[in-house]
Amino acid sequence: MNTLQQAKQPFRFHTRLNLTELTGLRASVLPQLLELIKKVPGSCIYHHTHRFLEQHQYLSPEPPNDFAYWVGQVLGEDELAERLASIDTVQFSTIRSLREQFVETIETYLTEKPLAKLRFAGAGEEFHFIKSISFIIPTAHVANNLEEFVGILEKITVDSIYFHVFEARLRLERPTNDFSNWIEDALDCRDIADEISNLDPYTYTMEELRKKIVSIVRSGYGKS
Amino acid sequence: MANLNDYIPIVGQPIIDDLKLIAERLHGKVIRNINSTAVGGGVAEILTRMIPFLKELGVDARWDVIKGGEKFFAVTKKFHNALHGKAENITEDDLQIFMQTSQSNIAELDISGDIVFVHDPQPIALIAKKAANKWIWRCHVDVSDPQQKVWDLLMEFIPRYDAAVFSAPAFSRPLPVRQFLISPSIDPLSDKNKELPQEVIKAVLEKYEIPRDKPVITQVSRFDRLKDPVGVIEVYKRVKKYIDCRLVLAGGTASDDPESVEVLAEVRERAGKDKDIHILLLPQNDIDVNALQRSSDVILQKSLREGFGLTVSEALWKAKPVVASHVGGIPLQIKNKYSGLLCRSIDGAAFAVKQLLNNPEYARKLGENGKEHIKNNFLLTRHLKEYLLLFLSLYHLEDVVYL
Image (cartoon, rainbow over all chains, first blue to last red):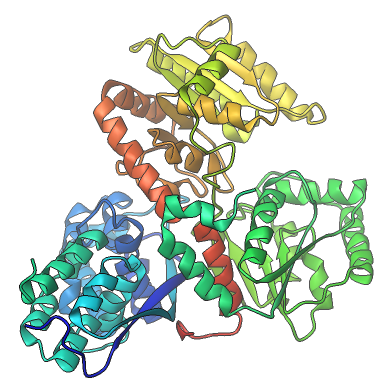
């Protein structure tokens, strides 16, 4: 295909910058954690299922979430920690449904193992509920064709990739990631769009994800 | 002093570009910072670095200092200790002195500006002067377990602010105002953190007569009971039974601080005649601290309480394996077994130090991960970005903000 084929509309890269808001809410035992997961704002659920990805993106390609980490490391409930860590975030298209999955997983576990309710976190090790505040800013980078798109993708911040892949889909509830959406709608390259769409981005570090998307696009137009 | 472009080789061009993008949204706004001292102390150090960078980004940042006499600062020092959970007898006289000095500052200071950014408890009462502008209270203190009387006093003022900022999640509690988490940061280009040539490190070791013949464990901290220097010696003694090593305890003491003199005496007594324990009284000498950290095999931070614990960030930035207490902001900097080892006791710390000294490859990996974690999360550029976003958040109440 012609890599210089002009898109029907250009793709403007945005970046997303994060500020962390504290809620003052904390849990010391599982029943408290469960009740708070049910009632905290969606931005808290988003934060605790995505923070690790951003802050530890260099070392962990796993999808650990803060709930799983705390339940395992602090409460020592390794089995529940594994169940929570295994929640497949990419399968959820809304924060609401993701929240329900965490609630159901913990409730089921507490029914099976009621003694787990007695485990408690020592002073200073409580779970603190935190919110993510996202600031979305258009950058100066605009792609009019796939060649330009890949060129920008190779150098843009990981925050921008993060926004278009994770935040756009789950937090803004768009049907797929922004890259696939544009490549299909503006360039009619459905194969490339689908291949990006079918990735499980939670299993990559951000830099690996960048390389993977670049490689998919390049392979798609025969330049790999 | 460095300018922002000097940080590009460390953090990358896009991070600096992002700062410029956000700062554009603040053009025309006056941000007035207020604290209690122009020199000395962590807050002044942060402002000294931040204000020029904000200006470089085109943000009209200003900095004013309140006036307070000896009595006022004696009272606010008591407040500081009480907020850290120390038992202090706060009298009615103390409260009166605090309010009287606050009133004179309210009367005398020009507090105009679109955003007034008040640092720490000393100037907190200035909020009485709030007009239609925005006010933020920045708390740099560990208030996880404060003495109630002083916290109640602060709560007379906090609800009148537009937002509060804390350094660690454990310092927050339900408040009637928005509260944000912004951790402090280190400057990778400062004397304390910049790369040093081997000959400089060697010269510093010679100066303090520390031979490189055996592994070195180091703690850099004031001689303060909350930093547990005596506990550090106990850790060393437990390690020494199995691994021949040296201990460097490096820190400052002030002649006008009777407690630090007392603690130093206790430390010396506990060290006895052990020639492998090096107790160093460093005046403010950042290059020496940098060299001592870089020449260490393991860095220890065995504090009992910590506001944040930037010495941990400093050590990790140098890719050193760190053993540190699970207190204050330290767990934000160290994820146990990923980027260092956390401990809760002398025995736990000794075990962790032995693990690191006996497994250099494991120690190296933790240090490398630690450096990357600091690079991504605790450098000055992240701090600057969060301050800019904090200012913008005052004009946007939603969780997803389109700028």
